[in-house]
Image (cartoon, rainbow, N blue to C red; front, side, top):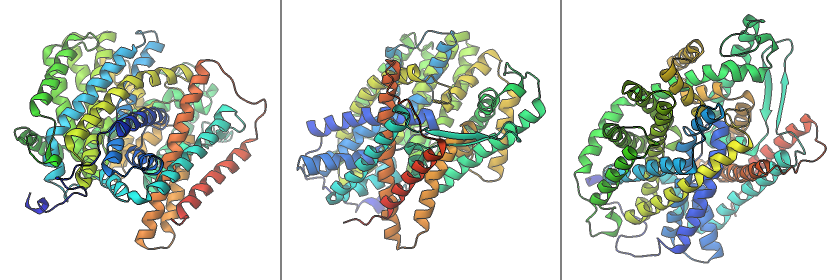
Length: 622
């Protein structure tokens, strides 16, 4: 503690400034719903989400500082705290809950009610916040300077550079407006195709293509060229090695789980019938490998978390040290555990409910430390969910809860744990930002809970809307993690998985790990359509070029920061219009034009978008 005892936050503990205001709460709640919906849409397509903290912070500064002419850094911090909860809750929900829709489409169960989705999301979100609060002192205060919390620190830097808020917010809104218009023209009016491709007749089973969408370029830029290239490599292996091999050796055979002769299958059908299972095996193995590699860290963090639970920090007289009181936290956790036991959606005994709570706290503590070390983007949330799902399925099967009831119960439990881990990681990043700028922790924690409640209320409607519009497990909405988790649960419960394909993916993942290539992005690239990975690679290539252009370290950082803000806007803009197009699709409103430009012009337009992104990065701040 000594090394941090001299740390002084930007707003001193003895100074009171506007923080938890009607303005900050309302803007935060709106952004929580918007970013939650946009990230749900994005995550179901590309299998990953992006942090909403910095975009929420700059939009907040644009509104509060520029439009409302108010000057309170803590109000802006409150907005990003509440707003980012939507993105994190959506991330946890989309990794698991679409599995329930997939079973409903197959006629095995009824579609999950909005209330069911709300309860799963609410319980997971509230537990995530409650478990993180006792860890704040240990992970954020006592290890300040040791755990970097990349997104939390970066967000604090953006807030501290508040005088630039107007220009930075403008950068986000430029990206948002451009992407919204682009998406409307491409997928609404259908003036030009948003996906182009070419199947090689002389190399049966393969197909090259790219989805020319702003969000993919945005994801690639934010993830960077390395992660983008790992995804691209995974896609290359699936679409130019595995699928041609299946076509070459399969011939006219009908091989489970396919139902038609392999020679009659187009590349997209080969992907749907076989590659999805190989990719699922690789994703599952990647998640488990990530978990195993961090096991020493898990044990150390868990011990530290248990020790910090016994300390009392909530009664401090200093404003910057007040947390939600421990009795309230423990009471909330007990009530949720009882509700999980009582509510039929979760077919568990009291012991099962206790296991959910124990696993939740275990993974919340792990998630909080992981994001502190390596950032939210590398947090193995899906790996934690996979481990929970496997254990929950085995426990339910062993205790006689089998069939569809057991499968639904396993996904519900996995959904809670996945959301717990995602929200705990987000809360820790937000509290880190607050620690640096001098926010009041208890107010941030209340704000986080408000963001969770509103996001939990909206996420069910978003999931239903997207399913009605395009359907999960399709090329439009692959829902990579949820489809894989559905297959895992079915395989354990009913022993009906194509284990040959799954194990092929597992051993490819092991080989990739031996080569010291990050498994998860490679595995996700294997699972997703190649055209998605190609679009992401294009964004990564732009960042690669931007980072290689000469300049001082400060200039390079400013270029990248401008690009991240602009691409955050691209992702949000496309996500918002994607949701609007889903609404039009559900109501059978067709706004498409009667003609479409040729594919080559789609590519030219996309290259133009990439050039705009490049110029935005290189643009000098005034």
